Amino acid sequence: MPLPEIDFLELNMLSCLGHSPNGLVYEVLDRDRIRRIVKFPGTAWERQLHLEFDGVPGVMPLLARVRHADSPGVMMPRGDTDLHERLRVGDRFPATILVPVARAIDAIHQRGFLHRDVHPGNFILWEGAWYLIDFGLSRDFSAGFRCDNGSHAVIRFAAPPQLQNQDEHPDDDWYSFFLVALAVRHGAFPWDGQPNGPPLLLQKVRDPLHPFVDCPAQEALLARCVARPGLGLEEVLARLAALDELIPG
Image (tube, rainbow, N blue to C red; front, side, top):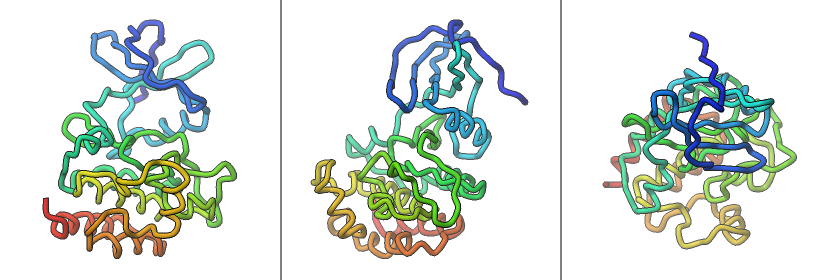
């Protein structure tokens, strides 16, 4: 069924949540007085990807297209929270809560794209499940792909080849994903004692396999991603389930 189209001026704007070259994000009340999120992507490319991936299991669904002057946008549900906020207060979860997001990443790869911005702030809780958002850095993938403008907005969760602006690969998304999975088991961010900035970047490039203290499960898991074997969904889900056994909650 085609998405309905709504005029932005028909909505009641509550707040601006984001204002950058990557686009505008607003919290609004819709016609039924329900809180929603409206995003006007910074590029036509990102908006097209939102439409392309709508309906993919594990991707936050779209509710409507939104028009405002010459700036087309999209409306999405307003989630309850994001995973960054839950980790910030030390919450711990089974790694398997991330199965829907893993399926979303795999589906994006199957369509020939990289997400390139997998981190807890882009995992949104809505109606009891976690969903993936934000395609501002996504690109279609081919062997030897490299983005001249760099990649991944969050150093802490980027894969080493992204930080070094090397050729990219779908397993870079899985490296970032498994950093998140390790984080939800530990209830802490990777390299938690290291502030964001050049020292963290250098530490990650030198040793991308030991983001947590005293975690025997991490080295083999992250080394598998760094080796870029071409991880399939079946292996990803098996390794995700194994984390719940290897790292007691």
